[in-house]
Amino acid sequence: MTDRVQLTTPNPLGAGSGEALATPFPEPTPISTDPSKGSKVRPGDRIFRWLSEGSGVLIVVIIAAIGFFLLWRAIPALGRNDANFFLYTGNWITTDTSAMQFGILDLLQVTVFVSVFALVLAMPVALGIAIYLTQYAHKRVAGPLAYMVDLLAAVPSIIYGVWGLYVLAPVIKPFAMWLNESLGWMFLFQTGNASVAGGGTIFTAGIVLAVMILPIITAVTREVFVQTPRGQIEAALALGATRWEVVRTTVLPFGLSGYISGAMLGLGRALGETIALLIILRGTQTAFGWSLFDGGFTFASKIASAASEFNDQYKAGAYIAAGLVLFILTFVVNTLARAAVSGKDRSAS
Image (cartoon, rainbow, N blue to C red; front, side, top):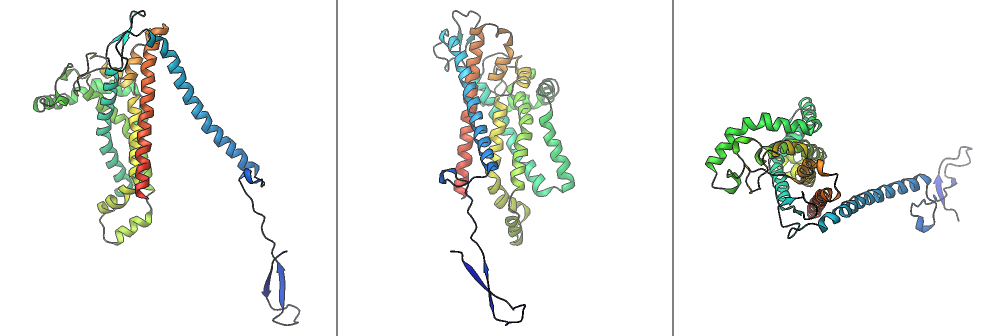
């Protein structure tokens, strides 16, 4: 039965000022987007749902296909590997395909070491730039400066490599030698197997890599800091907080998860960097000794340096096996990043 709402209005015909006019208001028909309840679903919602689910499934299928391809091509070479264990040796001898000896220990150490070193250099600088652009700089200054920082991501990798080896390395040579002479008692600053004056060291490569990942971390952090609720900032200012106290008590807690996410994106970029590190580190092919003044190969630079050997399935399979480890390493880094961000979000709520 249709509900009726009694509205008391003056009678336009003059029959009385208190007569009630009954105006029917039918109940609205509920529209459900849940197909399991049998209600009618809009076609646009159904198409959008199919496209979203299909896109998600497609990404998972592509990633799984890449992993399967790497494993499939690496198994024949691993079957001919005479090394004690693929993960525990640093030898890389693939000239004789009947008795190969190759392992990824040195590649893994150099890749992680140079990437973490670059991340340590880039994170404080990126945080300072993001805070300045969002909280201190005038809009006329913030826009062009942010654009200039973002332009660093557009510079080709090979340009960074040439610049690092022939321009940056001679400039930082006095500082590198001072570190070696003053802090040489620490393993990080020992001369190691590579000459400090040579330029092709992890010290130079890490600085170049830090410049390369700086725009990624800065862009993500800046976008998160901008979304800090304006009401919280104004409330802190109204209570007498200084600009730095506002940043420390409001902006940083709100954007910390985004800052960590940007850092992990930068770390993923650093782990896979190829040409720049190949140009800088290829001149020092000695064993890695956990010093900033050592040389070595990363996963990506090692694979790129041996492109001429890819005509043989077993030689190519050895490098594909190294690529498989790098593929897994990036998954581990992303998983840890998501766990850190999720834990921070739960603690904040």
